[in-house]
Image (cartoon, rainbow, N blue to C red; front, side):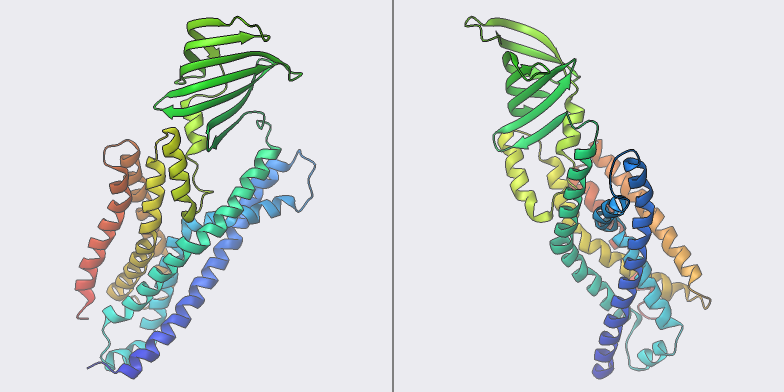
Amino acid sequence: MINLKLFNILNKYIFIEYMKFIFQITLLFFFLSIVLNLFEEINFFKDLKVSILFPLYMSFLKTPAILEKIFPFIFLISSMVLFVKLTQSNEIVLLKLGGISNFRIILYPAIISFLLGLIIVSGYKSFSSNLLQNYLQIKNNYSEKKENLAVLTENGIWIKDKINNKINFITAGKLTDHYLIGVTIFVLNDDFKLEKRIRSEKIDISSTKWKLYNSVIHINFTKIPQKNTFINFETNFDITSINSLFTSLEAISFWKLKSIKRKFNKIGYSTREIDGKFHKAISFPFYLMLMSLLAGIVVFSIKFKGGYSVYIFVSIFISVIAYYFNDFSKALGDTQRISLILSIWMPIILYSLTTLIGIFYIYEK
């Protein structure tokens, strides 16, 4: 028979202790990430005229996005520290006398982890995405390659390309596979004077040497255009470089995915990466919950009476295994051996089965 009063006291106690450990460990990784990223920023800005504190400011902008990736590890360690504290004190004996099983003890932190995961996805990710977007914009302003730009707009794709002392402004209505459809190219000299305008029905952008089909060329405002069935056009962009610009979704919050997907659909661009980011966000609270459950199962199974160092080592080991399995699953999805959606949920399914087996093992203990 469960003592309800004791159970309520337990829930309040676990909530306070768990939140304290999450805050402390998050703060530790926050400052650690700032220091590690600071070296990269100092190296980038060392030859530029910026304030001595500017690299530190840039590191602050990027760090929240770094924390997103290590939150599962943070929750795993926090859960393990909490359960170790419970098992190595007399508190666990009182809980057992009150009729509270090991399963109930580890379930409550897992529920807290799931709820915090929802908050991270719906709120924190928007905050970190905005900071990361500012970070990337500032980096781009100081980049030596900022003369080459590609932007996705409501009307299609816009590209600025500087090559061979020429400046090309390129607009396209759609991107289908490795073809730009409905393309207009304005070629300017270094003085920004228009030299020619090229219209093409379709351009193959498999390489940086584009292949223009059924193009019409106007040179120096001549009334009689040149018509060509096929010509080559050299640029700095190919399908890979354009894809890398448009599929960098880290700086996009969860709430903006729908509008970005609508924009991609309008120009015929693949929404596969956006669907993947959406499912990754949906799976994130489950991931945190499973990390907490795994921590509880490990602690209640091992029952090692030494210090925290052994459990920290176990946490690192589990995190490394999880990282490589997630990376392996992602590789299967990227190479289309399995669907992208399955590659995201496959680790969650595996961790769920592992957790289920562990719960059966400790349930009667």
